[in-house]
Length: 99
Length: 205
Image (tube, rainbow over all chains, first blue to last red; front, top):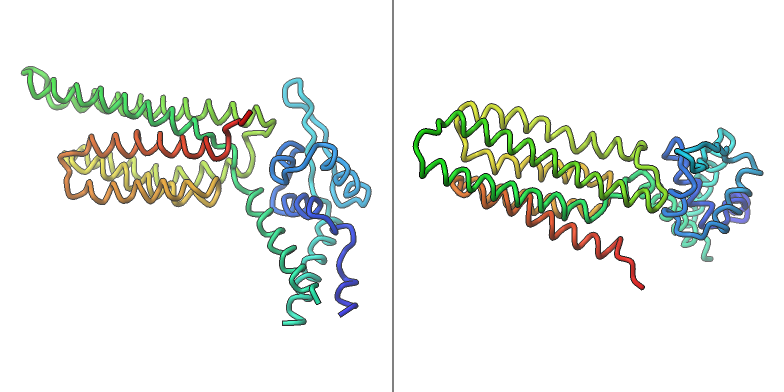
């Protein structure tokens, strides 16, 4: 059992981060405001979690413009995709193992 | 041991986020209200034209049908334009971009049944099965909504079911197509729009 829990990635130990990664898994690119609306968090909270994922090289940032407004969008990296898939598999194993 | 329960909840959360993020959620309730209003105005105009046609001589059937088609196209264009405007405003207010993979999927899945319906409607008019025009409009529109509900706010599925029920009843009373058409495209849109607006957009002070 303890083995199985060790397989979980500590980085994803937050609802906000899980939300970010899930959205980026199924969308090529998601901008900051869309993520904010989806996960229902404050700017600061979302930004700090995004920064953490960025530092882990799990997400890539792209800063652009829509008209004169800045538009920051995010993509998942290959590393991020691998790590998140592994995390999901670990979760599945925990469920299967006990039931 | 609570890990199992926790893992299950986490997986459910992931699934829910994946689903929600691949939907187009900016669709405004006010779009429904405006499109419905345009539809009712259009239906009133058509009703007036048809009653003029039956009370005066000298207008040919072909002229009437051409005029009706022009009105129908105008109504569809105006309804789409006003609907788009409110949804555009909402997405702008929320700072969410309106064009994305989710929008593309929504539009595509709405369009497939509707384009198929356009051909059927054209053929029905040519063969003068005029009584079937309204129920066929409602039927295919209902199917389009049910089909597209996976790509936007899920409640639109129920609007689709209501359109289908109206369409099926209308098939047996083809002479009252205009009333059914006005109910399905006008009244139902307005009711749906108000419900959605109250649920998702109303700003409470």
